[in-house]
Length: 377
Image (cartoon, rainbow, N blue to C red; front, side, top):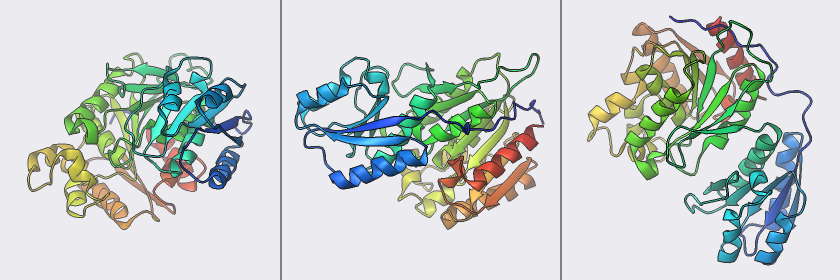
C-alpha cells in the first residue's frame, strides 16, 4: 500500500470565525411564507455563528435597488417574473456575493460570473443557500474548470499554513451526493471542504454533470477528469464521496489505484445492483445508470464498487447507525467483501444520520478525521 505523509494536523474550522450577515431578498411574487422564511433566515445562520435579515421587493426595480445596497452576502429568491429573473445575469459588485435560489425545479439557470444558483430543493433549499452564502463569504474558494461544460469545475481551498519543505501533502477530493439528481450540487460539501482545509489538506470540491441530465457515462468521465486535473506536482489523493458520491469516489479510485492513497465512503451507495432491486432513492439507481440491473448487467458490474473488488486502494467506510437500514447494510457488506478480496478496509460506524457524516460538528465526522490521519500515517 502506498502511504502518504500526514498533512498539518489543524483544528478544522477555526474557533474564531468572521461574523457574516446574510441578507435574504424576496423578489416579487416569489413563493413561500414570509414568516417561515424569516425563521429559517434567523436560525440557519445562527448555527454558523452568522446572522441573517429578510427584505422584500415589490417589483424588479426595487429588487435591483436592494442588490446595490451594501451587504456581505445575499440569498435572493427572484420569483417567476421575467423582469426580476433578468437580474440574475446582471454583472456588478453584488454578483460574487449572491446566491440565487429557486424553490422550484427550474433546471440550471444562467447567472452572472461569480454568482451561484440553487434550485429544486423547496424551502429546505433556503437553509442550504444560507450555508453556501456563509461558507463562500467566510472561506472563499478558487473556481478551477477541468472541462468546457458549466458543470465541470472544482472549488479549490488551500490550507492557511504552507506545506512543509519536502513534505508530500495528500489532496482531499470531495464528490457530493444527492442520488445523482441535478438539484443537488457541490455546495453540499462546503462545510466538509472548509474543515479539511483547516486541517492542512488542499481540497478540491468537485462538481460534475449529473446523469439525470447528461447520462451515466458523462458523470463517471467527469469524476475521472476531475481527479486527473489535480496538479501532477501535488501529493496522493484522498477521495471522499458522500451517498451517491460514495459510489463515484470508490469507482474512480478503482480506476486510478496508483494515485489514490485512500478512498472514503460517507454513507455511500456501494452495491448498485442491490440498490436497484430495493429501489433506493425512489428508483434513483436505475435513473442514473439508464435502466435496471436485469437490463444492464455489464454497466452495473463496471459501476458498482462492491462488484469491482478488489479495488487495490485502502478504503474507509463511514456509516451512521441512524441512517436508513439499507445504507447501513451495504456499508457492512462492502467492508466484509473488500477485506475478503484482499483490500484494506475499515468500517467506521457511529451514532448519526445520513448527513451527520458530512457535518464537521458531528461526533462521527471527528472520528472519521482521526481514522484518516491514522490510515495516512
